Image (cartoon, helix red, strand yellow):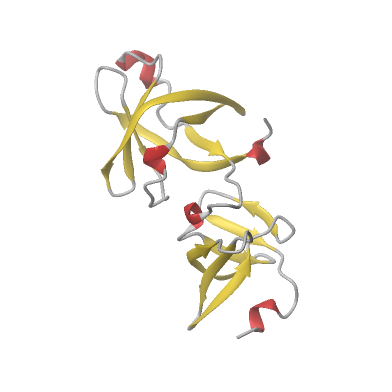
Length: 162
């Protein structure tokens, strides 16, 4: 898979136990993290898949995870400070982008406060200054999605619609 097929999830920050459990940090504030079955870890620009045995919330934005075949503290140490990715989400459920910063042509416009998919078309609701703006969340508008930012090129006038 190419890097474009992945979405940043977080980073391993420390060991949890001598049995190979790890702690990772993620900006994603969602129970979706606890429903993951697998993750990809970036080792020298190679995205290596790992099956999740269990994952649970540890503290705010902190998760505890047990990966298959990682059975010791020494095996888990190689994961510290490594970035974690998931397969890029499809447009049927993008609540995972809530709280992301949104940029239009590299200019900050606001924060995603929610997302909707009632008609098969994903829409993100962005708090822009003192108003809320609905933006179609489509590949044609999206330039790049990073750890907590979405870079878009929006059609002229879209942000002026009330």
